Length: 396
Image (cartoon, rainbow, N blue to C red; front, side, top):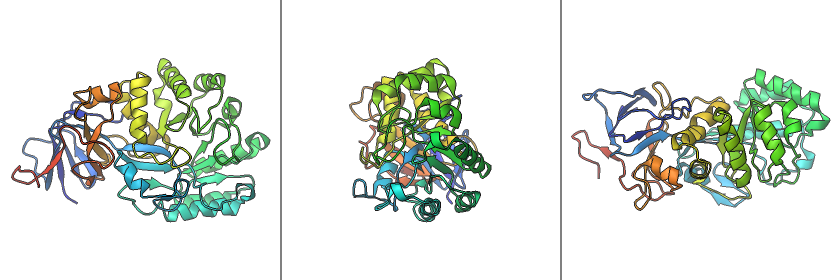
């Protein structure tokens, strides 16, 4: 694997909420990971990328997608959506359940069926790197009657998440709590559908009264997916619990502002995670994670670096992943971007604070450029990064 040196970095966003920006002008990548954030001027490399003053940030982590079979989504009859999301800066995606599988009868689910569905998704969509993207598929849709044998199968398949959506939680509290304990013992986190009934029409309403005893690892789309819980429940959720709270681009914007500003006032942005909750009824949104960042900063008044950290390090940590942070030893999943010509911002942070879509010039996953020259889903940045020859001249 080529040793890659990135030079002339103008802004550097770490993805770490505790220190979301750093004074880094160059970095070295070796064996797919960041070897140094302060390489010397004479550092040898097989490949040099000149950022030309552009910003470097971690690849975005979409914490809530609904894949089915590879890059086909039957909800919008679309092929190629994962590669398009990559061009929107998303390098890791996490399934919130493959419930859009054609013909799936939500009223006739069995423990073996939901387990097998997760196994198949993990062994197909979750096995192949679609355009380089790290897709964590195989999220089991939990239902009553499951046993530890089913959870053993999920662990053996490599599933990282299981979801309460069709499970009648209030009628089966003991069983739900047992599931959570048994799944965690196998390294599998739990996520729960919250708010009103989903597009499926078969989910269960879930608000604060349920969440306070269930204590999942992540409460999904708390501001709506598509319908949120009540304002009082949202406030109680922020004030009376400690687990991760997810907001998605397909939710209620007013409720998103409410929960985000309450978390900011409490100094608890560490709990906030992001996703798109797509593909689905909202559609296919390649720039969905970028739109989340812009909304947090330009509308909710969050610092741009913090918004980036929520979309990267926060979301990765909530799901137990080692991506989303740019630090020595971390996977070299990163985006090089900058303001689009005509933007109100002269830097990426300025553009984000103003709500302007950034332009992506390159995306790297495990140190390999997977989007080169420019994104197919954003306008080009005013100054684009370029790969250089060993003699310092750009490739044509």
